[in-house]
Amino acid sequence: MIVDSSPIHFSIRVADFGLDFSDIAAIRISVFQDEQGVDPALEFDGLDEAATHFLTYEGNRPIGTARVRFLDSRTAKLERVAVLADRRKYGIGRKIVETALEFLANKNISDLRIHAQISVVAFYQKLGFVTEGEPFDEAGIPHIKMSYKFPSS
Image (cartoon, rainbow, N blue to C red; front, side, top):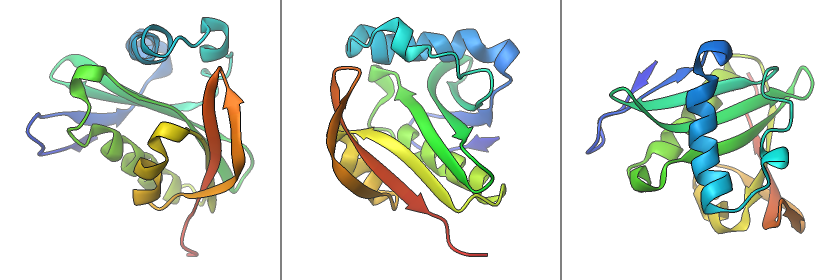
């Protein structure tokens, strides 16, 4: 578990899917469905149970989440990175991604992929991701493929 020292105090941990999915779902519904209008059938795609989820709390309040899926033994995909609107700009999203990167580095992953919304490309670039290819539409929102290459061990 990671505890950060930003102006608000929050902790990040690997979620227990069975116990924590209602908290994960509440965050994703707020961010992706309510704010961005994503279709629930696209948001909840049947891949959650096999993924590793990260969950961020401020006290007992769930405020952020992300999931990682392993595509093969050396490649993973970071998805569903979400922070509640009233808790953005505190470094929570950055810390969630850094936590996922640390987790994956310990799993011998060499390549991490993401379909980033165009509006947050700079956020991911600051974390070491690079764009690949041209923008495309996903769930009615402009995205671009990005990747992160882990240093060779």
